[in-house]
Amino acid sequence: MQRENFNDILAFLAVARERSFTRAAAKLGVSQSALSHTISGLEARLGLRLLTRTTRSVSPTDAGERLLHTLGPRFEEIEAELEALSELREKPAGTVRITAGDHAIKSVLWPKLQNFLPNYPDIKVEIVIDNSLTDIVAERYDAGVRLG
Image 1 (cartoon, one colour):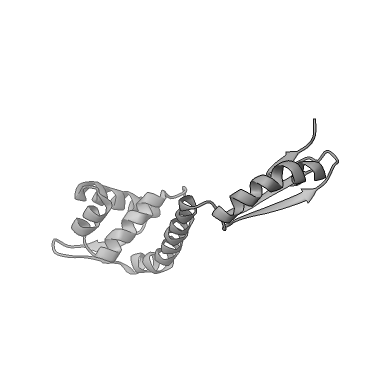
Image 2: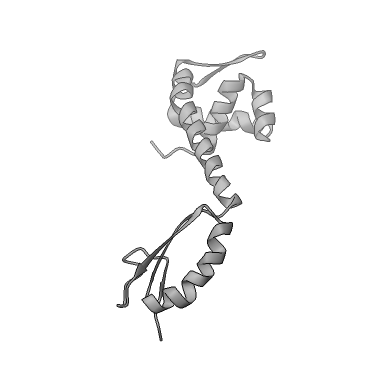
């Protein structure tokens, strides 16, 4: 079986939850016709009927119920995590790793960080004093400061 398009699954979840192509289409911002074609295509690829349709109602079949109850919560978790990640855009946060010589730390970095860090409490700075040349990529540093 070919890899499924997650948009098709999200469309199915919307219809199954709303139990209406009209409401699901409005929620997704697509036409009822496009949504119906999407669901029909998904059902054809799976070789299963996911929804029972009448002129007045839509309800999941047994296979549709199974898909709704197994995938629905997982997509909700993904959406919640993506929303949580978007909060990181609102304010700088994380750890910055810097390797530098003793002189550079005392004369350049520390004076700048003393002014910077109080304004950004969610940023942690890890400084390693090392006068040798360091492969900052291999050692997972964000920056390296050396004289010269």
